[in-house]
Amino acid sequence: MSDGAAPAVNKWIVTLTVMLPTMIEIIDTSVVNVALPHVQGAMSAGLDEATWVLTSYLVSNAIIIPITGWLSNTFGRKRYLIFSVTAFTLASSMCGMATSLMSLVFWRIVQGAAGGALQPISQAILFESFPPRQHGLAMAVFGMGVVLGPVIGPVMGGWITDNWSWRWIFYINIPIGALAIFMTLLFIHDPSYIKRVKAKIDYWGLSLLVVWVGCLQILLDKGQREDWFNSSFIWSLAIISAVGFVTFIIVELRAANPVVNLRVFRDRTFTSGNMVMFFGFMGFFGSIVLLPLYLQNLMGYTAYLAGLVLGPGGMATLVMMPVAGLLTDRTDARYLLGFGLLTNAVSLYMMAHFNLELGFWNIIGPRILQGVAIAFFFVPLMAVTFATVPKEQMGNATGVTNFIRNIGGSFGVSIVTSMLATRAQVHQSYLVEHLHPLNNAYSDGMPHVQGLLQGGGLVGGTAERGALEALYGTVQRQAAMLSFNDVFRALAVLFVFLVPLLFLLRKGKGGAKVAVH
Image (cartoon, rainbow, N blue to C red; front, top):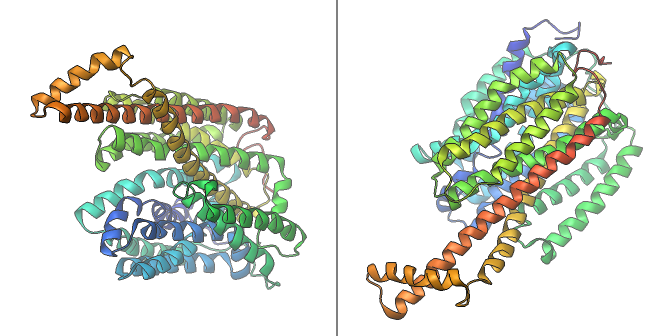
């Protein structure tokens, strides 16, 4: 470790130790998605009830992440890390053995709460294990887990569910968790500046955090299904979350021992970096949701084939992360970050030109380019964002940043799905306006479609109705395709607009020129 009071342990052993549980925690945020129909059938639950298996994990996870620094200082970081991995592993086994929906949701809440600390703690430990001049490399390793997790999760979950059982998506965590506990006991040590603090607990701050984060996460998860602000339920969640958020900020700025130390935002580079992080991951997670929907709903791909399309992009990220890390340690991180943002915009602009006749390899190309862009977005951004944060505040700062990243992703998923539905309605309305006998394309096409249907044994009025249904189905697909194009284009513009924020970041190498206090 970088602190002289802690026993010297090889940094790569430490890296493996902390990334094992982090990877399974990140994967578990999305691994259940593809297994949800199987869970729904096994538990005899409705779709709305079954989605609580997803929402419960996200809510409890989001609440714990920002208070990780406070919990580590209160209980000791190594002790808290062991507790988190143990609780996560136990909850995973109980999820697999659940016999009712209520018990499954309960253990998913426990699993999310236990796993929430793993990302911030791992990031803080990596910053300490690698010298400042190698912080870019450290974030490359961390980024592999953060970025690849959401891609691997659905593919792995689908394969396990199809070949074994949905329960094994939870059971598979048990041996990995046990190994992580054993390695943590051996190789992780608290630095001297982390000491257990006996202080008055900030009950008000903790309570307000639970309220506003919980309401916000449920709002983002349920908004599209509840028709957003046409629902009194969504309005109630929004008001409670907004009031709770404002009150939380006031309370935390006045508290002597806040659960989330907001004073870290006095650092301009840290604040600017988190702004880029929020909007960047909003666009990234949004596009990750769009691609499988496009492939499966419009192109007729199976879940496995959709995973194969996403896979090469993930491999490109995996390969380019170390490259981005090494370059970050040697050059101005802002240039690399600008390259990542603009390359992401180009890849999304290419996706905005997808159509219903596109070949498999034509889809993979933009996805690979996006994979490269993500590496050059995440690694230099993380390195430069934390470059001026004192190591005593690193646990608090990593908790805040991981929270902002996850919330940005939640916003992205909610916004793109809402935009997709809205734009599809707009395009469908426009296209339907042209389906009338005075339109030459319509009048020329109808006899052809009727002839095809009559050739299949349909005659008279039945053929006419069938022709209308076929035309309407075509209109729906085309409207959906145009809506995908619109949303991809909007995400491309978002990444371009993030470029000016780079001038607010501190100039210098992501760890070599900027001293960590």
